[in-house]
Length: 94
Image (cartoon, rainbow, N blue to C red; front, side, top):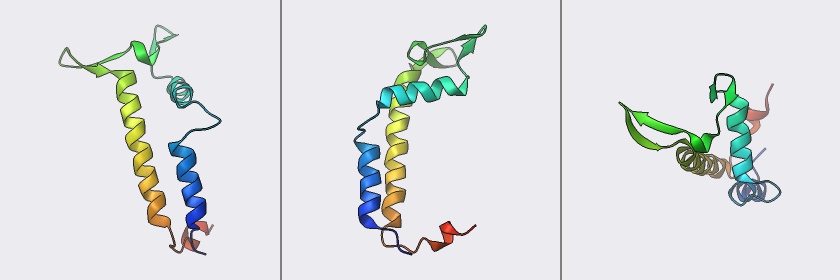
């Protein structure tokens, strides 16, 4: 079976132009799910965290996560583009 170009384009559009979900809420929820931002059993908000290197501030964690997410989505969309008109049967096997 070949990957359908319209289906892949629809998935890309949904990812790139969020409708029905708020990207900031999604990111915040995922960060909370990791449980990594705890100090004394309190969950720290990601926009209150700073990334430091050797004691010097590098950037705010929230800023990093937003840029990282944008780049991650861009790369996922490139993968989707690479599937257009390709045989995908090997990915459907159990």
